[in-house]
Image (cartoon, rainbow, N blue to C red):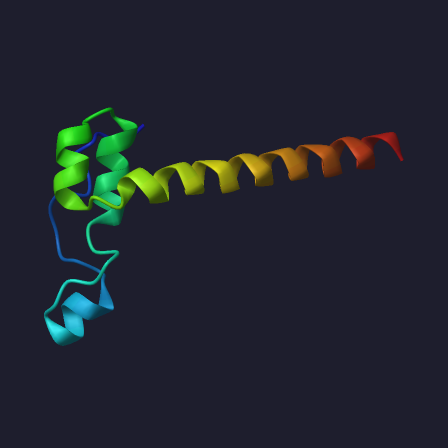
Length: 79
Protein backbone atom coordinates (compact mmCIF):
# COMPACT_ATOMS: atom_id res chain seq x y z
CA UNK A 1 0.00 0.00 0.00
CA UNK A 2 2.85 2.40 0.76
CA UNK A 3 5.44 3.35 -1.85
CA UNK A 4 8.96 1.98 -1.44
CA UNK A 5 10.35 5.43 -0.70
CA UNK A 6 7.83 6.18 2.09
CA UNK A 7 10.39 5.75 4.90
CA UNK A 8 13.38 7.16 2.98
CA UNK A 9 13.03 10.67 4.38
CA UNK A 10 12.59 12.00 7.87
CA UNK A 11 14.29 11.69 11.21
CA UNK A 12 15.48 8.30 12.40
CA UNK A 13 13.73 6.73 15.39
CA UNK A 14 16.79 4.63 16.31
CA UNK A 15 17.94 5.38 19.86
CA UNK A 16 21.54 4.71 18.86
CA UNK A 17 21.27 7.37 16.17
CA UNK A 18 19.44 9.86 18.37
CA UNK A 19 21.51 9.51 21.53
CA UNK A 20 24.94 8.34 20.38
CA UNK A 21 24.95 9.54 16.76
CA UNK A 22 26.11 6.06 15.66
CA UNK A 23 24.47 3.48 13.47
CA UNK A 24 23.50 0.15 15.03
CA UNK A 25 23.08 -3.24 13.31
CA UNK A 26 19.38 -2.59 12.82
CA UNK A 27 19.70 0.89 11.37
CA UNK A 28 17.95 1.13 8.02
CA UNK A 29 16.11 -2.18 8.45
CA UNK A 30 12.61 -0.71 8.04
CA UNK A 31 13.74 1.07 4.88
CA UNK A 32 15.52 -2.06 3.65
CA UNK A 33 12.45 -4.24 4.24
CA UNK A 34 10.20 -1.74 2.48
CA UNK A 35 12.45 -1.68 -0.59
CA UNK A 36 12.82 -5.48 -0.56
CA UNK A 37 9.04 -5.88 -0.46
CA UNK A 38 8.92 -3.73 -3.58
CA UNK A 39 11.63 -5.92 -5.18
CA UNK A 40 14.17 -3.09 -5.11
CA UNK A 41 16.95 -5.39 -3.88
CA UNK A 42 19.84 -3.06 -4.66
CA UNK A 43 18.44 -0.21 -2.54
CA UNK A 44 17.42 -2.65 0.21
CA UNK A 45 20.98 -3.97 0.36
CA UNK A 46 22.33 -0.40 0.56
CA UNK A 47 20.15 0.38 3.57
CA UNK A 48 21.02 -2.80 5.48
CA UNK A 49 22.56 -6.04 4.09
CA UNK A 50 21.01 -8.03 6.96
CA UNK A 51 17.66 -7.67 5.18
CA UNK A 52 18.38 -11.01 3.45
CA UNK A 53 18.19 -12.68 6.90
CA UNK A 54 15.68 -10.52 8.73
CA UNK A 55 12.93 -10.27 6.09
CA UNK A 56 12.58 -14.06 5.58
CA UNK A 57 12.52 -14.55 9.37
CA UNK A 58 9.85 -11.87 9.79
CA UNK A 59 7.83 -13.41 6.96
CA UNK A 60 8.04 -16.85 8.57
CA UNK A 61 7.03 -15.49 11.99
CA UNK A 62 4.14 -13.56 10.46
CA UNK A 63 2.99 -16.69 8.60
CA UNK A 64 3.12 -18.72 11.81
CA UNK A 65 1.03 -16.14 13.64
CA UNK A 66 -1.55 -16.02 10.83
CA UNK A 67 -1.72 -19.83 10.87
CA UNK A 68 -2.12 -20.00 14.66
CA UNK A 69 -4.77 -17.29 14.73
CA UNK A 70 -6.74 -18.91 11.91
CA UNK A 71 -6.65 -22.26 13.74
CA UNK A 72 -7.76 -20.59 16.98
CA UNK A 73 -10.59 -18.78 15.20
CA UNK A 74 -11.79 -21.93 13.44
CA UNK A 75 -11.70 -23.83 16.73
CA UNK A 76 -13.80 -21.11 18.39
CA UNK A 77 -16.32 -21.32 15.56
CA UNK A 78 -16.58 -25.09 15.97
CA UNK A 79 -17.08 -24.86 19.75
